[in-house]
Image 1: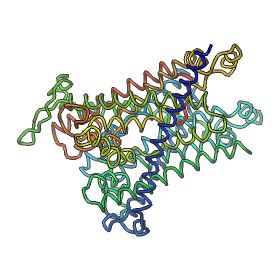
Image 2: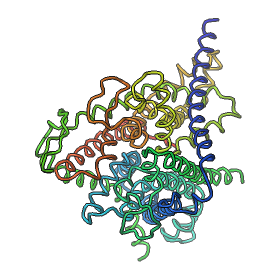
Image 3: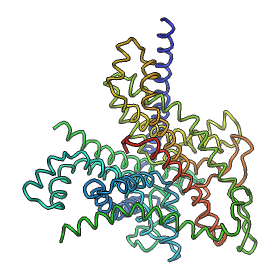
Length: 272
Length: 286
């Protein structure tokens, strides 16, 4: 009897210890980032371009590419999710697509970079912002598909039936009733997907590459915050490394804010 | 009319996943064809990576990055699995209710931090510490594996917790009612019930780790030779691609596509097995 309790205590202690160790390490990383970021950041960093030791063009570039990626990825992802949940009749096909989309979600991001390089960089022989955007949209697509799919599954069938009973056509029911009631969940999914791609580095290294200047010309190589961090951190001089830390700090603040906004939306809705 | 159009468009959108997947296989294979026809399967067992003198030809083999990828992933899994399991058990069974939510959110937020941040932290903070303990340069397989493990712990913990949460409360309560301790409930009820899902989660995390680029790129050293010890540098497939892809030409570029194809096939098989066989019906937080 005593033994059972002892084993229980030991195991529960080990599990708590694992949680504490894991969380301590992660806190260590966050604290480092905050300390290093806050001590190296300066307002001029946000108003100057990389060529003058700031990150303004990098931030704008990263957002432009993620924005273009969203313009491609969000509508396609939403429509695909609608097909899987509302139109798909052949369950074998639907489940197959679902699984493929899940596989795409975990596909190595560097491979997606290689794929887009072959399609959009090699033929024109120049890094370009379009390629970076497309690579990010491919990263984004499966996340949007999967959240739309699962959010639509939460909409009760009675709503759809009510729509049919008043003579609504299928696509009107989907747009005006089903999508509307799943709005918050889908928005959260979109925000989480955006937060994911804004911090991606690997698919951008040889698609958009990086630029030290502010540009909106997506046909040319394009400024990227994450690629710049990778390059800066590998330079030997202190100034570059410090800039890498400030840039990382800004990037993390952005990613976590978007992420938290998305989570807040869903919890807020549940409360009401 | 609009209705027809709407459903057609949604069908086409759903098919993009399939088109992309097939497209990636085809494009990588076509670009790798040069290397595949020159080296064949010998590519998998050859350790040479030498660019020809005239920039044409050369001898290329993928064994060093393949071994490097597997080695770092293996180290990461050995460290991450017990800790992630501990966190998952803690969150589902041990933690008092008021702690579950904040800790869960913390774990999920940490999974959202860009991997390049983990890599940079490893380079500037962990590497010097490991250098002081084990000697060497601080850069190498072990450092890369440890940082990779820290990076996948939140992901693995979150999806394992989701699997464990599928255990019906009534089963657990029945066991408690018979006088079982928490550990016995975990061992005899939760783990057997969620076993398949837990294995799937571990495999899925393996799939994530094997394709991870940025957390490893800073730390593995990017040297084209086998590591002589755990603290020695080597390279991995994603790192070769990240660092050398843009400058490669001709047969070397084709060999890089060969490596990318291998990585894609490995991760495809791993993830497909995890999803198809183990994780049916478990819906994970993203």
